[in-house]
Length: 80
Image (cartoon, rainbow, N blue to C red; front, side):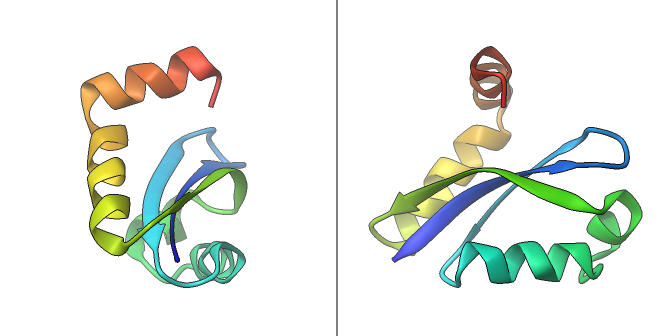
């Protein structure tokens, strides 16, 4: 099972979209301890949405869409 997840920065309200084959709570922990430069500068984060995907290919495809202009617009319209 794979997941696409959306995080919101508590620091500056920015949104982060990612995908993982791990547990979403484990990835949230990684982001909150600053595992990457961007997340280190913009954390802490809260999980605002997670969606199951059949496999990593589908998860990456959905992640790519959500990071596009059209995907960001959809997330804005949904209030995410």
